Length: 294
Image (cartoon, rainbow, N blue to C red):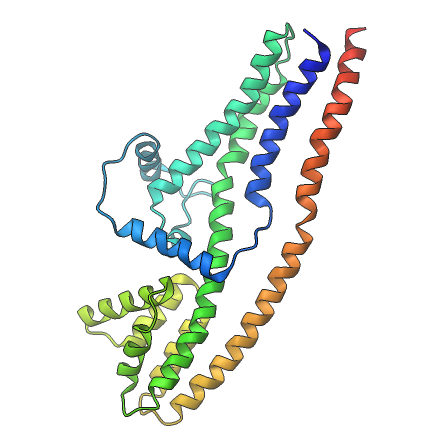
């Protein structure tokens, strides 16, 4: 077989693998509305009737029951709870990625065998690449969780202002929290309303529910708001405290967005390098194969 063809096909396979990594780690421009829409769709899907698991989902459920509590194998339950992703689905995604990573070197070795070359090194790389692809879903969950917490914090600033506006009328702090949470149907406000419903069933206060939600989703601004409401049950200066907290939180969100934009800019070099590497491989491998055949 033509040595150039033998070099081109592995290069295409390597380029496909790099493309998967680029799609995973390349920075994306995500608007707040799009992110919340995506999270809302996840929430609706989780509320749907439970269907019979099949295929990868069955395998994911089996692994989730037997996975050891060690790094790279245990599920990030807090992050999955925030994103409302079932643990079985998380492990199913990991199994799919590991299978892809294991298959790429085997396919490379099979192509070499068809060309009459015996090169066992790709087979040795199969478990290593499978493990690398296995941990990709963990990185995806961490990235989505970070974005979800940022969006949650951004909507807490809106909620603070809505509660402050509700307190202008002759209403209690408890009623102000309830009415402010019913203004929007975004994922964040639905999650807050769900916590309030649970608080009514357990006969606990709404600020206790807010603090519990803030700890669960990892949003300190929500915990601070709950503590402010608890310490100001008499409503003395409560509205001013909420507006002051809202201004401080807006400044923190602006600083966080600026830092995220700078990090995204610095990551723009990754797609460039991932594009250059396959090109260099296509240029170098044919020469190496010709030298080896001499």
